Image 1 (spheres, rainbow, N blue to C red):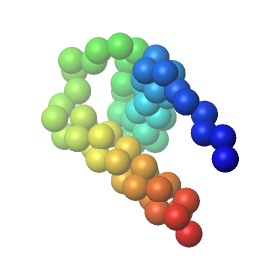
Image 2 (cartoon, rainbow, N blue to C red; image 1 turned 90 degrees about the horizontal axis):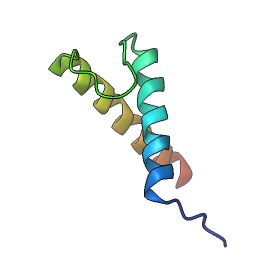
Image 3 (tube, one colour; image 1 turned 30 degrees about the horizontal axis):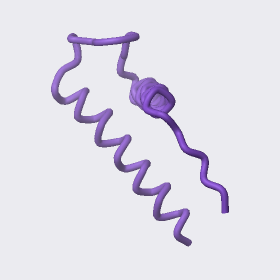
Image 4 (cartoon, one colour; image 1 turned 135 degrees about the vertical axis):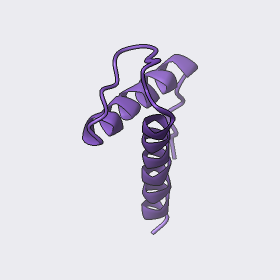
Length: 63
């Protein structure tokens, strides 16, 4: 079984895209780069939803 290795740059780009997608779906305006205008609640909502989806994805892959 061949596993594709990602370098740090690819991994960061993928996580950034994922973060933007989640923020958009939560109706949170996430600008490119650093966004110092996020509240703690908004940042926590984005991070929490990302973790929730990653766990669900892992659990589904184990079925």
